[in-house]
Amino acid sequence: MNFCAKEPTRCLRCKKCWMRCKRWWRIEMAQLLDELLRVKRIREDEAIKIMKEKQLQLEQCRKFLATKVAAHDDYKIWRKKEEKRLYEEILHKAVHAYNLNTMRDQIMSFKDKQQQLREEIEKAQTALTEAAEHLATARQARMDAYKTVKKYEEYRDIVRTAEQQEAQRSEELEAEEFSIHAAH
Image 1: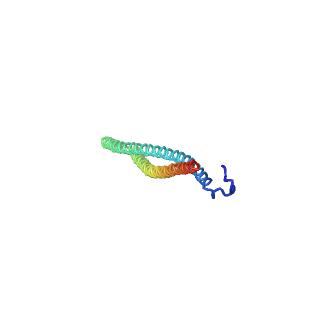
Image 2: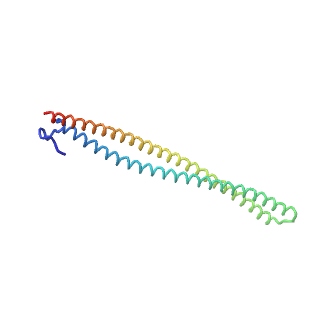
Image 3: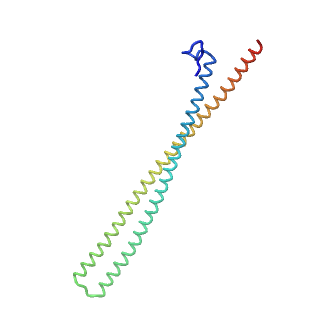
């Protein structure tokens, strides 16, 4: 940058140098804002990507929960039919105590399996709740990124408007100086 010959260390005192410094600062500011805006848009895109991933995970959790509930319901129906079949089988035959113990163990294993399916449903519900919370967090992060981008766009527009106004003022000053020099 060229400084004023009058005071090279303090160029801001000279009107011409002040205008040059101001213009330089605005150009630098505009470039910095464009770069910041580019970074903010990248972050917004990443937030959108993460939000979509979280939505997909939530849908997968819902499907997983639905399959677990369906498996539990199917098993419950099958277990009741199987227990009924075993009881019917016992009623029509003479059965030894050993066979009764075996049947009781079978029925207990059916109930254990059903309990295991209930626990899997609870785990799936917990995973669904966590996925919903993660999605809410991702949505909030996306909204924050969006607001930040909009804020920087507005600020960039303000700086550009100021640059245009400054350019007009500079042109007017140069035109005045030219008309003054032309008049002499």
